[in-house]
Length: 366
Image (cartoon, one colour):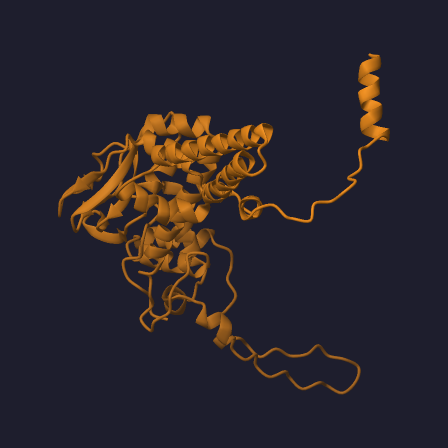
């Protein structure tokens, strides 16, 4: 213990001072080693940042080892520098192995760069997603059907890579599916994990198509296990469904070019007017009897007179001018029958019967 105390006292209180500084500097190899070490410690993060860092550190430690062996003639300097050089080489070899292990070729590489890389999805997470679809790329020939209305069960989730898919219902065209869009996202979101269902639309390939497909049960198992992947698919599916809704919305036009928005109540007038033409006259009268009394049309308002006062009689007020904003928002059913709430009653009647119309059969005159 006394010997250790003596060494500690010498290090703390009896520090040896340099009596004479060397006038000559070390060789160029020593300064080159420090330059490489400085550049190595300026490396960034990520895979390529680690490559930069360990490459320069390995070069710098190699220069230190050579300097310690040839110029400093110090065995400890050489051993420590060479040991650090080997550690950096080992780390570089490990990075190369990890990159080769997570490399995807062909369609999966393009899929990652197009869809997942902008969202900064790690390669390890993307590897689990690809492994769930068994790393298989499927294909469809021209005019080959992916799903048939009322027949094909909903047992997978597919993403289109190349080509174009036509979506139709009862022979009527609805919209297209383009590359890097999900082919059956509405069907996937419409079912719970324990439910079964069939397609309500027909999906037909208009060109030669390629796609990847995740089986339903393995994908549900992956989403339950990985919370990050579950949120990722929730965002992608929600965006894809919104794109399909707006693609359907683009088909709704009035005769003079007005585009109906699915978020506005004006669309209900269109749907109501389309379904009202097929209702029998008796049902219309029964519905009208249940409706509240409606105010008269703005164009036929009577002249309103001011109440009598003790002062001289006040002249009658002029007729109220028509409201152009209200008239412009009324559908053809309002202008023809004079009852703006009739379309709402028909929509409610359809909803109560479980037969909500999907699209109008004709556009109203506005």
